[in-house]
Amino acid sequence: MARPEEKAQAMMNKWVKMRDSDNTPQTSTRRPYLASLCEHLHDAEKWRRQIIREISGGVSKIQNQGMGDHAVRDLNDEINKLIREKYHWNKRIVQLSGPDYNRIEKHNQLAEQGKGQDDSMGLQGSSGYRYFGIAKDLPGVKELFARNAVKVTKKKRGDVYKYITPDYYGLRDEEDGVLLEVEEHAAKKRRIRLEALRAEYREAKSVAECQEMPEYETDDEFGDSTIGSGGVLGAADAVAAHVAVPTQDIVQKTILERKKKALLDSLL
Image 1 (cartoon, rainbow, N blue to C red):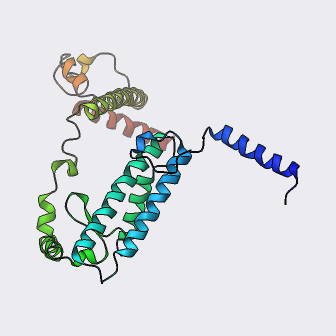
Image 2: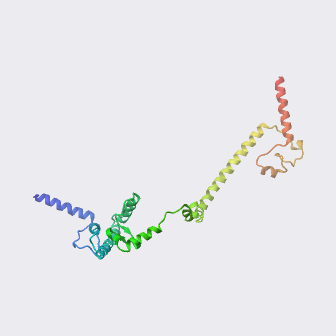
Image 3: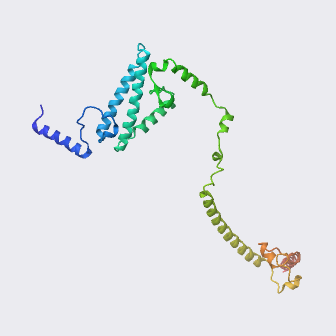
């Protein structure tokens, strides 16, 4: 038997734990009729575990082949009632800052189905009603699932294409206006950068041409002054061409000057 000091320490630890968790033990031993009547997370967890034990016991009992049809139907109805009650207790636990058991159970159920395992929660019928154990073999139940199984056939490639909407190809992405605004902003930035690069290129090109081509006193030496330096009519057309193209006379004269220079260099 423990010493009085150990008993006092154990009681002190229980009191500190209750104070930190802010949970008071439920005085009543009966489960509340409504989950909303429970105000403590500890009690909600306890009643949920009790419901799970009752569901497990009912599922085990409904496997008995010697039960009559009426007893099987009543027991199957009771199990479905407990499942709905458990769902409400799961929601109440979330409201009391507890874990979301509904989401966890759904995730586990999908994982088991993906592995090809049997559904431990029975066969689901209309409106979420489930059939457990020998309730699946009741008159009318087998025919119901057989009829539904015939309707569920393997989809062909053409059937899959029927359900593909324009959203799959991104044809409606600009309807909300957000994408168009982003694209317009990006296009504006690209246009500004492109104009800057073009201006830099024209400046570098003009400097290079001035260094290579000989200088002439006037434009009248090679013809009408209205002809642009690019071989086009007028200064406006020369600017629109972006790059000045020399006339044929200028090209011939430049080639002749270079040949003369090369000949003189070879004689010296």
